Image (cartoon, rainbow, N blue to C red; front, side, top):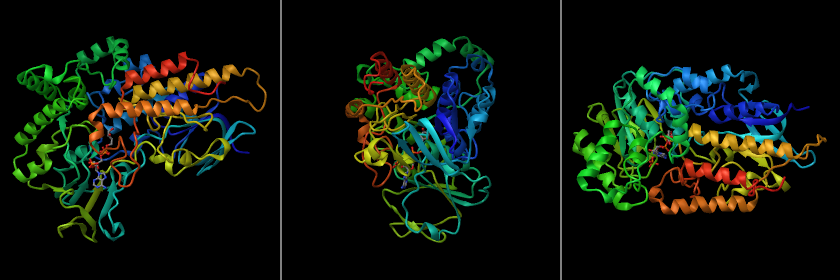
Length: 534
Ligand code: NA7
């Protein structure tokens, strides 16, 4: 007999751990499985040099353990990957959750059994049975390997940043990094001084602000500790959930000199969200506003990068509308003689050779190590290879043939008692508070469903399932918001534009954390009107 639980959670990152904790409070039996050899999700996998969260440290944690918020130590305004991992390990031990976790166990398939209202789940370690299945697979967990021919030819080291090896050695080596998103920027900045030479293969240049990482003083920490309730309320009432005072001023309502002052203040203070949310209210909705921010960035790049050719390649010309990024001296690295940049929109990579990479102009770059910082097949990527069979034999892949539509990023029609944490069309915001909103909703929905069926007959005929209308309405809302913003003007993982051949779709809710939480509340207050009656 397969081990049976009320709830099986797949994924032991921020989402899975919080969901486990919350459901245990309801008295349910819960198991968490993860394909990794340890907990942490994103922070288990992303161990590349320089890996750092760019959310403020005091907000990159759970809000529900108030004693722990007061006492858990952290030193800087940002957390390194290992700090986040240590925090999650600490939470798991502090709340006695470890016995519910099972590692090296990869979800393969899940099939809904209509007879007994359960999910039959197949994993790499054998079957499970559960009443509710919750996937917390991570929104950025499926690595995107660039589609470059001849990978097998390359005799040097080839890595993806999210599959980082335990042992590596850059010393004196000729290294290439492909990709310059949040990850590439961190990696390039960290390794440039260590490697022999560094070639950065860039598809689109970035608008990046200084992170301004620094130690947080005891006085600042005391201030945070004394106002945590207020801080979390502010987070939940904001679009980004980043602790930034979000501007309500439109860019063109102030003089050019005032605009410059506001941008400079954000540049000096540091952090991507301070800049994109704290300067002006309409950076992502007004072309002239966005253009003025771009001009400011371009002037900074011009001041920093000395070599005119490198500077030209590093200077973006499109809208400031990708995932906002920050750095700890990224542009400065290109003033080193051992660091250069290849614009692969001008000269695309045509293939691997045994010794490196070849571009379309015939140049062969001789390399010892190639690092792909090429991001992820975001949101629906990890679901694509799973066989999830819901009501009437409908598979999730069939259901998502025209794009992964969901009800608020958490549920789908035809998939009773299946919830996703940070599934497609979940909100783009600081991840821990966004996850808390979703976990709270899922926990209360399950509690509501369970309470509705007080007879403890076997099988327990308890189901909760999104309506098709609920899913369609959320999709339309996601589209509406996309159409109101400039995000749609650039190819990014928000719309599947980072991956050749991926369906263009609105993969993320761009309306902000506050609006997302309001929608969850409305759904609950309506008695779950976008879900089938219990
Ligand atoms: P991102 O933000 O998706 O960035 C990936 C980078 O890799 C980006 O510069 C891409 O260029 C580039 N890329 C992707 N595919 C290719 C191919 N095939 N060839 C060349 N270059 C490519 O992922 P990150 O890992 O940096 O960041 C993920 C999240 O981590 C981020 O959102 C934060 O939450 C932290 P493009 O710009 O698409 O042209």
